[in-house]
Length: 385
Ligand code: ADP
Image (cartoon, rainbow, N blue to C red; front, top):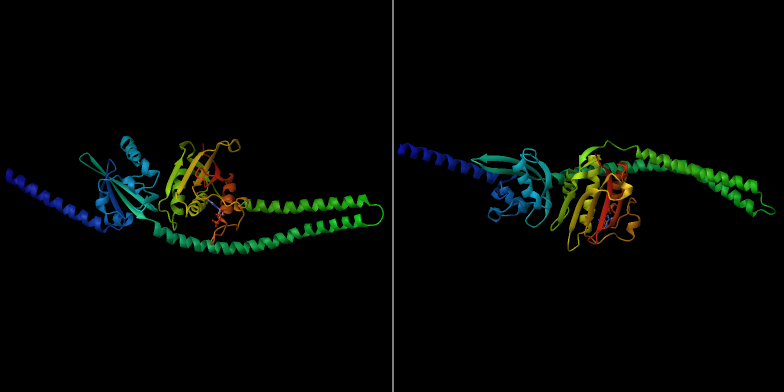
């Protein structure tokens, strides 16, 4: 039977080498990066596209832990993620896929779409990761979004112009009336002889009433703007922060950035409008990264905790902290005022939009110094029980 065995061996060897050749050709040509790891997280295969994307040669990474390709906090936690899956069988990413960030050799962080599959063969388990670099797609989406924003801006300016002239018209009446009553009062005081107190009181009563009316007009305008608030639903903060940060990194130099996202599990679920809240996270993260452009250490921390202040009891506090130079003293007074900026090409609307969104969510937003001498922006949200 030795002969037959030899034949079988020969056949399976040929099949094996065919498989290897096939795999080699797939690895060389698949457009997405394909990385295979074992159950300890060690890299066992690294496709040509992965080498391009991460700027590592295959020989640099074989046998290394996959976490070297991740920014914090996944970098420190990935072994735990695999352990959790092997222990519990609970799939958090396998077969699901998600939007997250990856880290190139030079330390720069970029947004990716990751899909993970699993292969098990004779007790050996391997995980395959397909990675698509979203930088380009998101840049394209960004360009479309920029164009849309520009259009929206133009129509907003027109709408604002209409609103402003309507407002000017409405306010003009009480203001003119106030001016008239005050002038009449002054004339009464200037007149020869005793002051007609009754007339003077009437002029002052009238102007006070007109001032209240002007206030009423402004108040109803704010009510009108506030009514534009949109649907909120339960969202995971961890997901929102990770996606928001990934989107904020597009087009900014994220090399050498030490980033971490931490969410207290007690407050992971919040009531939010996803798109709007992401806008807030993108604005704050972009501002932080831009502020650190010339900082020797570039630390970015996104975190969420149960709000410590009694005013915000039962709420969630989200913090975006950086190690930049801190706020410009002139700016700190007008931080949330539209069109105030210290940047050459800044619009100065990011923070005022963020404030409108946070307040629309029933929360508040403020800035404080961060522990690294930079700035920390805080905002609160409603938690979901
Ligand atoms: P823009 O970014 O277009 O200037 P923003 O409303 O987002 O508009 O920000 C207004 C200003 O607030 C910025 O120009 C900057 O001076 C200041 N600022 C915002 N975030 C930070 C930060 N993290 N560190 C220092 N300054 C900041």
